[in-house]
Amino acid sequence: MSHTIYPSLAGKAVVVTGGGSGIGAAMVEAFVRQRARVFFLDIAQEESSALEATHRRAECPPTFVSCDLRDVGAIGRAFERVVAGAGPVDVLINNAANDNRNTVESVTSSDWDQRLAVNLKHHFFCSQAVTNGMREAGGGSIVNLGSISWHLALKDLSIYMTAKAGIEGLTRGLARDLGPYGIRVNCIVPGAVRTPRQMKLWQSPESEAKIIEGQCLPLRIEPEHVANMALFLASSDSARCSGRAYFVDAGWYGA
Image (tube, one colour):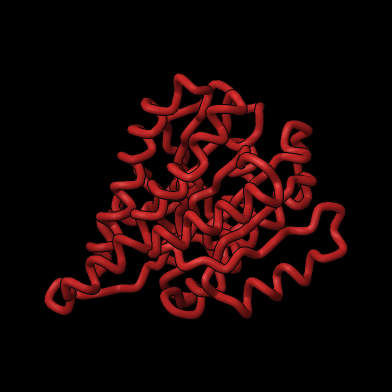
């Protein structure tokens, strides 16, 4: 896959949540190629440390910051570390999520609270953590990760879809509230992305074939395709884009 270089991203301070694996790891690697100063927040120590080590010899190697994004206090401490190392954050990618399945009957109050915390709550509080720095710098870019799931009403994902629908609403609200400060807020809506987790837990050759049949483009979606959209929305090339959801789904939704 060829890679576009965005000169406006060189040297920018970029934070990717859930950057240790899957789509998040692809985003970390994509921003490293842009020579951005990348920090990624994750709770998965082994995978995150391995990713950090892989890029240790890069021109601008990424930095792993251990953080439980369900804990607002931990979020604050993580961003304090980022600012101490790189100054105000220029780009925030709110990517962390967990798409575990549950039947309606099996969901407990604790399940509900935990899933909203890992899928929605941190989007707001991470955005809040970077707002003052972006405002003082005259602008910045926040990119949230939604999901095609709630657009398609997929089975056994009620909590996850509630959170992901909320992310699109949050994107519009933050775009309106932060726009006067030059802060752009957008949302990427991925389709069926071939991450290791998805292929291990949820997809089979049969289910993948059915999804591809329903897409306008009969092609698989890799994490890098989502990362490429994030690069565009983070760069100055998207300077007049805000408050919108951008689908990377090979034309699955609405086909």
